[in-house]
Amino acid sequence: MNKNNQDVIMVKIPNSSSFTHLIRVGLTTLLRIHRISSDDLETFTNSVQKGVDELSQTGRDIVAYYKIDEGLIVIDLKCGGKKLHFSSSFS
Image (cartoon, rainbow, N blue to C red; front, side, top):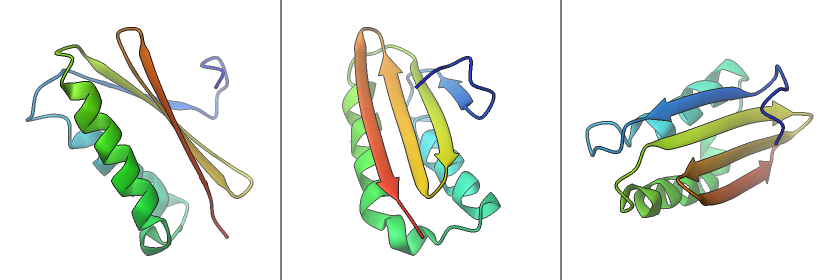
């Protein structure tokens, strides 16, 4: 995902159990703004949360990049040198 693309939203959170849920909240908000049923993407949102939980074990800040484009939602998570990529189509 190109960070210079204006259609990408970036959220950086400190690695703390108080903040890790914000990545899923951001995803839910983005789905609502675009009127995408989160019920259709429950497995996707659960996978993203598992990725956040995995990265939170590193003790470093987590950066999430969100993008919705033509029936596809993409989330890249970065933490230190590790990167996780999630994507799902929707109608």
